[in-house]
Image 1 (cartoon, rainbow, N blue to C red):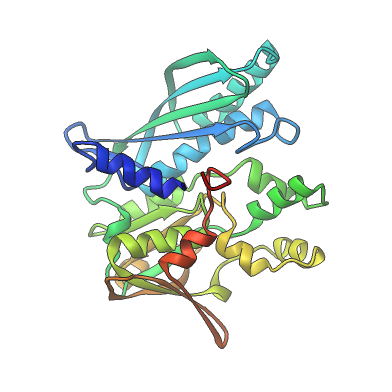
Image 2: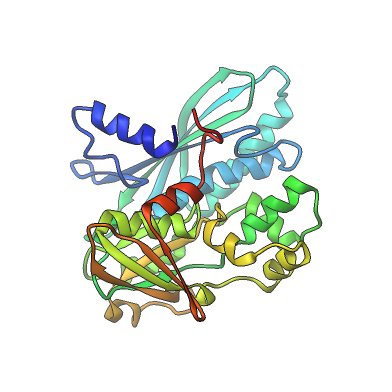
Length: 320
């Protein structure tokens, strides 16, 4: 079974699964958003390639990225740790120094958590943010003729991860993209300042196509993009070419960019800071079997449900 199969079982088992769908749950009666992410040693990180300080930063940043996609103001986090006996006091001190620094950058407070024993290091963070806009974001809010925008650049994190996994040289900026992602809080604030309706937003923690397909699927619209308009660092292209790899494949399917995919009306796009957002495509007609259409010069690739399931990131690695 894959992650999506587990989610379907969970939704079908719960009496009320209405909060399950987006990466953040919006609790209307409290006016807050809640999200939760877990990093597991030898699944999401290796202690041979990441320092405790940077690991602390990343464990918070991945949650703040979800709050950014929810157009929320991050306020509080709780941190739960599962630790093996080999972990010493220096590791904990450096881990929390990283947590503290990224929290200070975004005015976030650590308000509690839990500590247990385990065979591996597991860091589980719950983040809480306030509703900042009268409008909401959700994967289901994409509308016909919306522009499809992205923040930042793509595949740098995938290049950094590939280099660490295969002991290959990569520029420091690529390694940092993977180990120390930057949540797009400023970009979310720019959206909040100009939107006048609910919009579709999702982060790209599991890849660009993953976010595009989930938005298309939830909103029941097709999405068409030009892969050559997706921003990518020259050093990222150089890395993949040097190692005889198709960089466009990593742009599409490489995860952990933690950028935002945004669908907004053209009038809203005209008011946004163009230094923060890049236009890569458009939302098309409603479709009961929505897909993502990727244009690459004269070639066109259609990402249907089957192709998406076969290529998207599997958190469980192998079929069960």
